[in-house]
Length: 232
Image 1 (cartoon, helix red, strand yellow):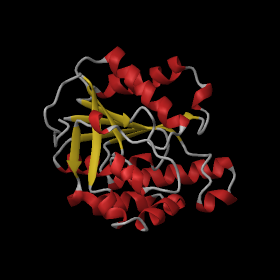
Image 2: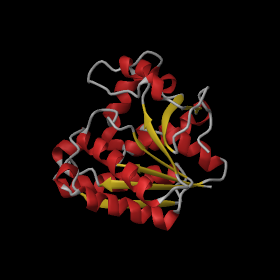
Image 3: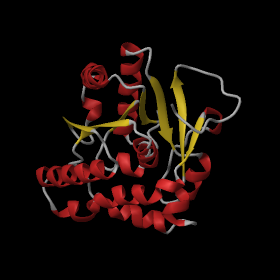
Image 4: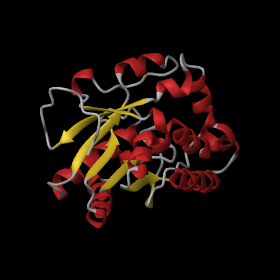
């Protein structure tokens, strides 16, 4: 079983569906991760004091640490511009993702929900590229969009979040047994720990917020009478 996770920036995977990544790695699946940028435009923590090349080097190192914690078999890091994916032709981004897909031939591909969770333009563009790549290249690969539930989004009051509409959620994975692994991956991203600290202040803390990870199955389209608790 092969699973391909595709995100825009270092730390998207850890604050995102890393519980699901850990669960499937534990069950013997091959976990592949594509990160399109090196996160050089990050402005949190020590990144405020570093040049963009220095931030890119630091965040790449952090990403490699998280990939080891999550038992990622293969990590592919692109050199697309952080914060500048809107300037890249869709054809180039889709080609990059398609090449990874053809080499891996995944059973499932997972990326952001189409609204990008935080609404970040890079997130929405990566969602579009991955969705297009799956449609064009593989009739066998299941495609899932990862995001927050409306209840989760409401807990975050310091910025606007874009949840998956409740009617679109097809799968919810209980990752409570893998929260510690998720935290280890998050803590690899030392420069981004302000996010973790904010989540710790939420009602129930980081652990309660992240114990369920939610997905919308996009391809192949299916009608589920009940939410599923396994992706594949």
